[in-house]
Length: 262
Image (cartoon, rainbow, N blue to C red):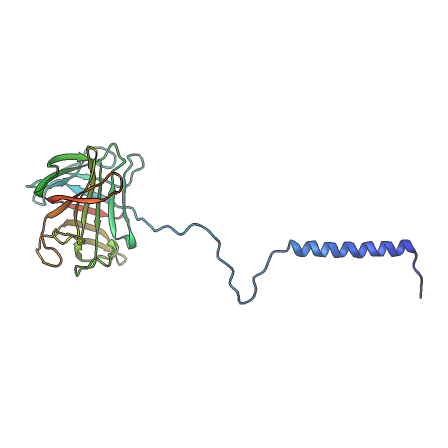
């Protein structure tokens, strides 16, 4: 057997150690692979936001025959703040005017017009008290107007998306949030309350199987289940600290609204 010198032995040993170290470093920085049959964990991140389709809403000041003023009225402006061509106001999303006009909630079950933060757009509201106590008279308000639809049978366990209403739904709500002085109020007709009326939401136009144009008016057909007291709404106040609701009285509430998407 051939004898190797001590220097050759050391050189061979160091080469072997160098190759081993290089292999170990390469393995340490090699991307991990998924084990067969085991799904990779999904990336951690924020949940997917619920879509909020934009809408354009028109609030009319008078009945369809243009003879009677309604309790809920507009500011008679266009989205660009020019005067509209009649007794109505057209809203729509506007970051400039701090207006949010959209469908929201589960399956887009709510139409909501936010004017709380707007200095240039408003609604007018006449408070005609029927029973109880609370404010009366007409007010210009930077409030929020909401309509939510429920099961047409009268149940409140299920909400119904506006896009799925291709004919009409007689079991909807009308809800107006506003502040007078330092007091916060909501004027509400909803299936959640047994003693008041309902709104009816009707579809005017269907596109690709979904409604894109709606009318919202009070349901005038008296029904002990779906609509016990047409045109009647509850006025509730909110406690400033804990938000507790207190019934103030009942009021009449008339309105005529058109909502289109977009």
